[in-house]
Each structure stands twice: as structure tokens, then as C-alpha cells.
Image 1 (cartoon, helix red, strand yellow):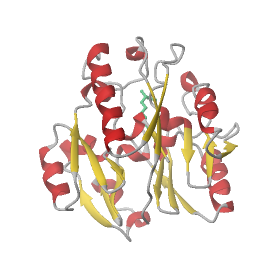
Image 2: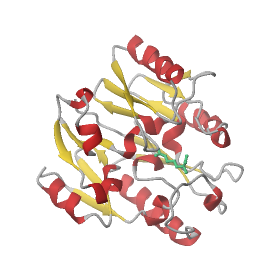
Image 3: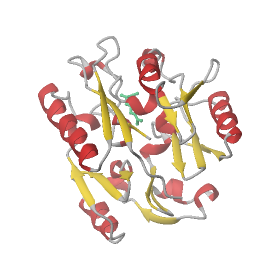
Length: 255
Ligand code: CIR
């Protein structure tokens, strides 16, 4: 179940990034601080050994630095998505060009919609969230492609959250960090679980890279629970990312 990454793609936030979609009431984010946090994120990926491609901002798409939503990259293939928010459709074009040199490409076609934030890869098994962004057609199209390459997949109802990975992520070879709602689902029965305190649910969007775990700053109880895993933890401040409903996984494609 171990997936080793060698590369990542990120995109610099544009000066109008605060015009992106958000439901948060944490206030308007600051561009300079966002850039500082984004730079620290890129540095961290490089420290963990990844070769990072940094794409330029796309000012027509204020959410475009959330590159995770535009593709699903596996060891065999890159599936370019049709993002579920109409305002984000088109962001995938430049990501497609960046991925073309590394993987065979496939695409999610309308009426299917899918955001990469709804796709949790656990080795060769994929959980695909059905959410306000990812519909059945999108999930089935992705599942069909994944199956052709010997993977298995399963749809999971996301309910209230934005994306599947807003509430469940892999933090160890067989261990998930997740909300109580996801922990109760049969889909996740076979895994070890670390439960999120309800008031620390944002920390569910932690990012495992090659045996290192990156966690958002400001969630001490989750951090203490994760320390029990005995793997190196790295804490990053993503306050400005959070104000736009994003998190650590959203900011990159890892492969
Ligand atoms: C959006 O609503 O689409 C962006 N403001 C946030 C996307 C976060 N992406 C992710 O969780 N994968």
C-alpha cells in the first residue's frame, strides 16, 4: 500500500486569489501571507525529495492554485478532470499540458464532473467521493479508467463537506485520519483509524509524502494523536489557504 512520489506540480496563487470560491467566515485572505505560506509549502515538498514544477498563476481562474482538483495521477495514468464548479472549468487545460510529458492522459467528459479533492488513493484502491463537485458519471468514468489499469475503486457519499479529502486522508500504510462520520462507514472498516476531534476537523486534510506527514498548524490534539504513529511530522501554517476552503492536499499534484 506504499506509494512513493518523485514529482509534484503546484501553481502560484494569483493576486486575485481571494476572489475564488469559499464558504468560510474566517475573513479575507492576505496575498503576501498567502505567497509566504505557498513558498514554504513548495520548500517542504522539495525537502522531502520531490522535483516540483511551479506553474504561473492563471488570473482568469482565482482558484487555480488548488491544482489537486484538476487531475488524478496514478503510477500508470493521469486523468484530467472536468471540475465540478463551473467557475473552475478550464483550469485543467494548463495542468494537462504539464502532465503530458509524464503520463498517458485520459479525461473526464461531461456530463461527468469530478474534483481531485474527492479522490483518495490508498495504494491501488481508490475511494471516490460523490459530492457537490463530483457526480456519479464523473466517478464512474474515473473508476472505469482506474479499473483498466488493475485498480479497484468504491464510491463514498461525502455529505456536507466540500470534498472527500476534507474529512479523510491516509496517514500511514494502513491508517486513516478521519471524522467520526467517515469512521462509521463500512467503506473504511478495514483500516486503522485516528479520529479527529470535531473542532479540529480541518486537520483531516493532512498530507502523507514518502513516510513524512505534513499537518496544518494550530491543531494540537490531532498533532498529539499523529505523533503516536512514529513518523516525522512537519507543521505548516496554511491559514490563508483555509480562508478559501483549501488545505494541504489541494495545493499540489503528487506522483
Ligand atoms: C473551491 O471551492 O473550489 C476552492 N476555493 C477550494 C478547493 C480546495 N480543493 C481541495 O480541497 N482539493
